[in-house]
Image (cartoon, rainbow, N blue to C red; front, side, top):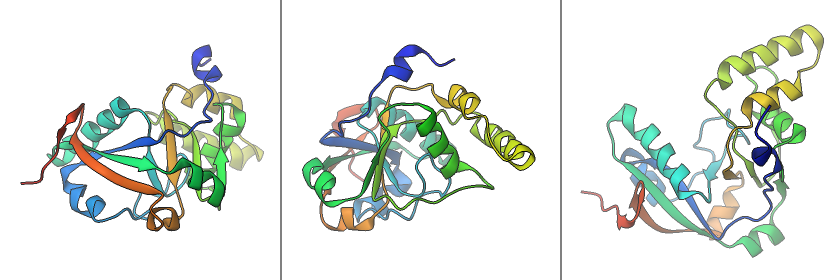
Length: 197
């Protein structure tokens, strides 16, 4: 069973400053503008551009992405106009890591039974992706054999982190300046700006 502090965490307030961890090989494409359709398809909240309010988590993600391609880990810092985001766009806020959250993640990540959504943005907790592919294969097998998945087991397997994620699915949010790039820094060091060579 997940720890009680994880299950009791409430995700309701999107922070003004959000972070996206990546590597220097992606610097030019992101610096020139976000393309929300450029991400992998099978992510927690579907295809989109992902941010977190946790700089340390963004830095860890950047290091993980940078190592295999022998690049430097960097973090893009964005300012979010949360008032306009809430007023002007269709959202899905998953306030708790509960059965609804777990089923939504399954619906987005399942290789065989994914259900695309139409939300402009989604906000909620991050799933543990360490053994997710094997777990999803098991869930898909269960669904093929029985017509359903064990959502409680899935929740117990993926609810392990306290940090948040905001996924942007509507390019208009970027185009209208609701998310603005402030600067790019080195991972784990907010004070050292990354300047490309």
